[in-house]
Length: 126
Image 1 (cartoon, rainbow, N blue to C red):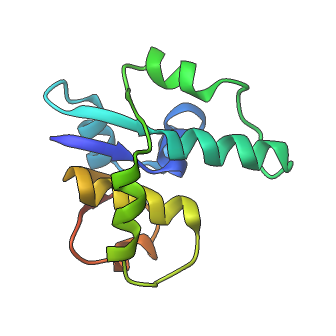
Image 2 (image 1 turned 120 degrees about the vertical axis):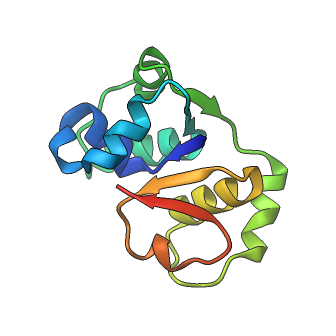
Image 3 (image 1 turned 180 degrees about the horizontal axis):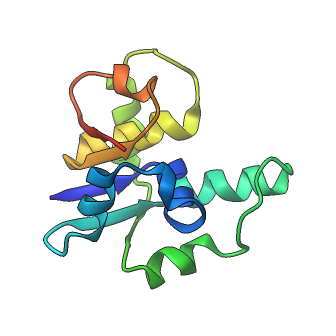
């Protein structure tokens, strides 16, 4: 299965794994699954760190790659997929992650209840 990590799941993997469900941890650790880390996650963490809203490493991408996660760039197709989404909330990071998951047919691993309101894409509650 191709899994795309939501930002908070990636943060929890490194800082607070006890916040992630046992099922989600098993999915992440299952060698049969491919775990992707979007440029959106790196972007969100960097912006929030710069604003003083998040304490995070200077290079979260290096940590993700070290963990074996596959970087997923943002493409024009991902940006265009935004127009297919309902308007459940205005968070640009979450909306782009959902668009990527939907476009790539990946399963988004998330704990965000607002994200779970979107139809037509796969997610697993972490």
